[in-house]
Image (tube, rainbow, N blue to C red; front, top):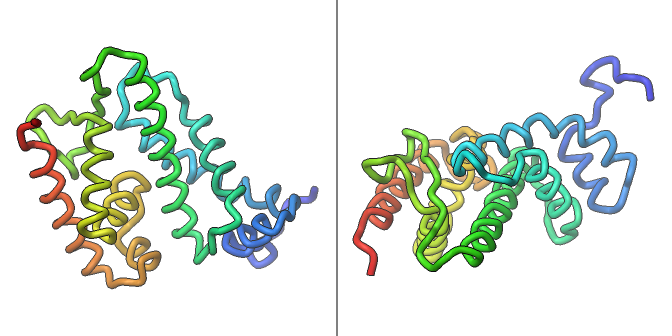
Length: 195
């Protein structure tokens, strides 16, 4: 295959996603080089929050998430930012399932700890139980689904407020406000004493 000479000849990610959805294998070949580096960056961001000796690798996380997304015929791709937001959500779910499986093999109460970046510090020691974080995000989603989506897109996918606003069809200012409110709510949820 001859390399594309300029961006005008290269199909955009959204068009390729729509072609992949209908089973176009050549579109999949064209799409992967366009999205792989960004998917790896999202996976590395997710893995950065996991324990150091985690056995799941970022490459496996990328491949598993892509297979889930490419195989989902119910998704209506809005644009490239929407795809990466959903990819990040798929990666998060894969990691949660992995943590649940690992937890089931351990004694009760031995939840995995993940380190959180300074933008989302919840505890003094900057670590939080990955399953507790997931449960808190699920509770937040029942209270305010959009705030939960903003956290997923900002914290896990690393999307900008502009990209989040585009995906959710809200203003940048609303995305920032939702981020601040969700951070405060999650902090309160994750630092309150457990029953």
